[in-house]
Length: 317
Image (tube, rainbow, N blue to C red):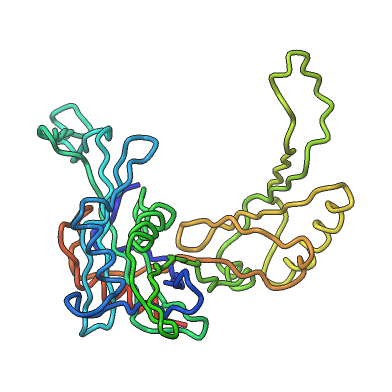
């Protein structure tokens, strides 16, 4: 996937930093590290200790590079890198002159010793507490940098960070968890105004009577993939899926997922609740932002415009 210079997608989250002890207070996002404890201090210590990184199964490295509290924006920003030692070097092309006998001319780049091809992303958390105690946030969507990998790194930083609190006359130490939940901000009805459905996938426990004399294999689940060929729109999708799920449940199918092709040339796989198939379906959708600042694939410093637009997206209800 090639990154554009003036465009990025962001996914919205609600992030909880919850104390592991029920009587402990929540950590603030920011406090002066010399006198108080904070989320900023927990992540900063992990980064400074060279412990905020994880090697992926394919050899790539995901690492928290920097953390910054921006008082003017009332937000905490985390800069994340993904380095790929095994990635092929980039190639650039341009149209060739017709007289050269070639359609294009290619220029191959070559990395130096010790260099790795890399990308970066921003995670921006608003210093705003919602009713459920979580904070609104947005993660810049970059290939290879997902909330799954970021979650493990931040969660480890929070678990390693002990802070004291007083209960009665006793002082106790605890730590915090890190719990990001994707914000379901899009409806199926609205998505189908400009988007369309691709496939529906059904699954159930396997009924196969496959005989494996050598005991090498064991049937687990059966999967049925249906291509959507009829017209499904905002007006009829509830009835169509209600009929499908009702009939499929009668045949033992238990799990239902639908692929939605959105109007921004992206897609989402959404799970349908088998007991509530006729209700409105909410799902997580990325939001696109455009930038005047030319964005690089990888940055070693925070990009202010990215932080400010991510924050705006995070706080939009």
